[in-house]
Image (cartoon, helix red, strand yellow):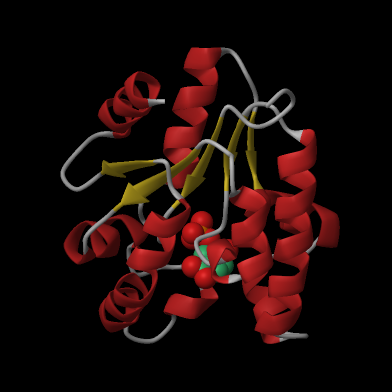
Length: 167
Ligand code: S3P
């Protein structure tokens, strides 16, 4: 597929999508792009603020458009916000792309996300929210992925190497 991203990284918050995307892009000599960053740049506001007003539904519609645009335009490495694959239209757009699911367990996700989170969905009890999110989403991430890579206890460099070898 010409013009398609070299890899599209999906997974829960704390999976290391942006970090691994940066490493892969550097090693492949291509650009890294992130749909959360695209939305923040286009709106001129942080994601947490968009979630507050006008709300999550609006963020999800911005996200859907951001994913569609990035898939059409970007031929480097693309990382998606953790909730992007919840949208059925977005999942359909991902068909045929080199989608990699970065799998993370509860302990590592909590450790990586930390408590000072700018992630609106995780405010409150970070641990129980991440657990609910992992339980709900793991099958969805797996359903769109052509490669699944475990990230628990591993460095981003090690994860990036497995992706390069596996794609
Ligand atoms: C979200 C994950 C965030 C961001 C938004 C919602 C989610 O991205 O898109 O806060 O629903 O999981 P990261 O996966 O980069 O944290």
